[in-house]
Amino acid sequence: MATNNDEAAKQIFSRCLLNCLHISLWRCYINFIRRINDKRGSEGLDETKKAFDFMLNYVGNDAASGPVWMEYINFLKSMPVVMPHEESHRMTTVRKVYQKAILVPTNHVEQLWKDYENFENSVSRTLAKGLLSEYQPKFNSAKAVYRERKKYIDDIDWNVLATPPTGSYKEEQQCMAWKRLLVFEKGNPQRIDATTANRRITFTYEQILKYLSMPLLKWKSPEGRYRLLRQYTNLF
Image 1 (cartoon, one colour):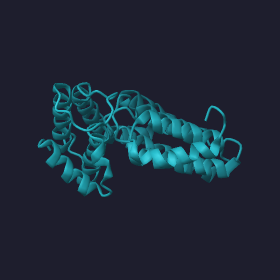
Image 2: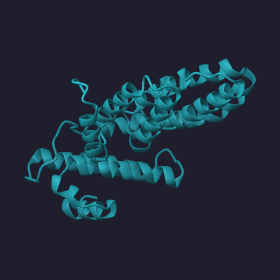
Image 3: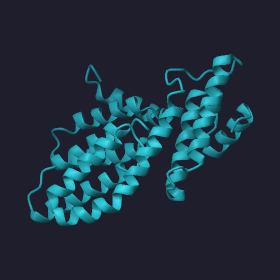
């Protein structure tokens, strides 16, 4: 990317993105997409929007995804409009993304809520009263869950590389830390719908597979990898 070799960058992202659900890599990806589409007008904006949706579909449940949600919202707000109906459509889209973002227990959920309040009040104070009243309890739940979630996340070494098991004390401690996070997610502390809860659990499994052991990655299906993971660690 530093040498503007876009084709090489595309090949690297195509190989690595879905095998590495690390928020820093995905932010690098979205910055790349924004750069190559910057001068392509409406077509480029559409491609960038699709890339944001693609990214949040995979890493939008990450506790560190708050800045990505904020970046996407700011991108949507900056999209040019010509006709009145386009402005209405943009506001509706921004509202929907805000309402998704404030339900995710992330490191920026409180800032997202403040921004959402300002957004709704700037559109219509009358409408804002009802919507904010509806979403305030949901935001409070996400905020509380993030505080608990962070306790488990802080015990995990995010800089460790996935290698074959050695049976070391640190390795055992990391397995236990991942187990605690997984049990927490499986408990659905936010009391969200089953589909969303399962997506978070699946995301946690995928993260475990990236950090615990490289041999697990040879399995193509998530079910096969999860089964091997349970057998391998005797923890999950």
